Image (cartoon, rainbow, N blue to C red):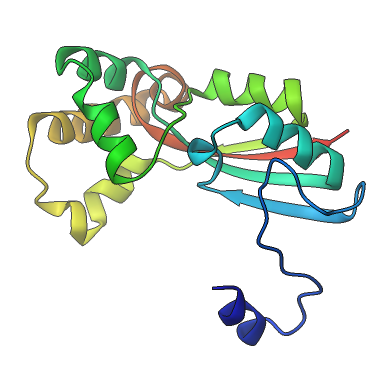
Length: 172
C-alpha cells in the first residue's frame, strides 16, 4: 500500500510503516495526522495517543462508537459473543462511547476542538450491503437508532446506539 500511495500521491513528503506507539518522527513534525478507523485496533491506545501528541500539531480521528447502551445490552444478552466476533472478524479490541473517546483524547493527546457524528443509521438504510441484512439486533438497532437520531441526535449517538464520531484534536 505504501508503494501505491507513493504512485498516486507524488507530493507526499514522507511515508512510514511504523508502530504508532513509537515512531521516528520529530517533535511536532507532522501538521495533521489522520487516524481513520485506527484507534479501536491499537493494543495500547494511551501510548499511541501520547506519541501522536508528541509529533503532531493536529490529529483527526474517526472512531466507531460501540460502547453504548444498546450494544452493551446486546453483548450481555449474547454472553459476549458479539464482541468476540468483532475482535475476530474486524479486529476491534477497544470499544468507545463518545464520552470515553473524548476523555482519552483529552487525557493523552490534546484538546478536542471539533466534533461531528456519522449518522450511521442513514447509511444503513441506503447502503446496498445493509439493505437486507438479517437479524434482530441489526434491524432493531437501525430502526430504533434512526428514530431516536431524528428526535435527539445527542441521545442517539452519545448514549444509546452505535455510530461513529469524527473528532479534531489540537495536540499540546
